[in-house]
Amino acid sequence: MNPKDFIKARLNELRNIFPELSFKYKYNPNSHTHIVDVRPLDCYQKNSDYLRYEADFGFEFDNRFYPETILFISEDSLTQISNPEFVFNANQFSEDLQKEMPLIEIENKLEYTDFEFENHFALAA
Image 1: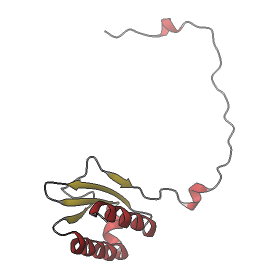
Image 2: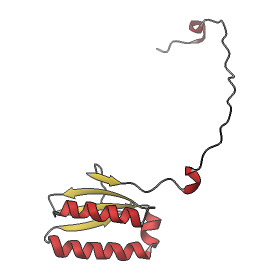
Image 3: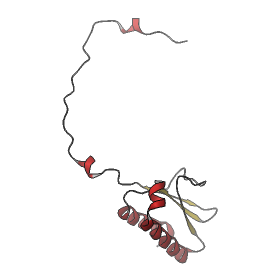
Image 4: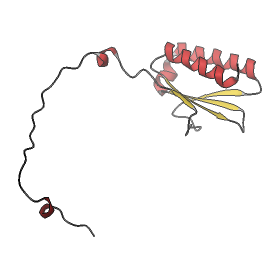
C-alpha cells in the first residue's frame, strides 16, 4: 500500500468514527509531506479521542513511510490547502434534518399585468 492509499483508508475510518470532522488532503512533493486539513477547529482541539487517534495515525505513518511525513493542520494554521486532491466532508445532516419536511402551500402573489417593461428601465451609460 502506498502512502496516499494508506491516508485515504485512514481518513475514511476517521470520518466514520468522528462524523463531525471534515478532512482535505494534498501532497507536497518538494518536502515529501502529506498535508491533512482537519475542520472544524473546536472539534479538532477539544476531542481527546480524536487527538489520540491522530497521534497513533501519525506515528504509524512515520514508521511505515519514512522519509515521507504527514502534517495535520486546521483553519488557524499558516499552511493552507488551496486545491485538495481529495476531501472527506463531515456528515452535515443530523437526524432532525433527515425527518420529513411539512408541505407548505405557497400563494402566487404575482399576477399578470399589462404594462410595458421598456418604460420602467433606465439605461446606464
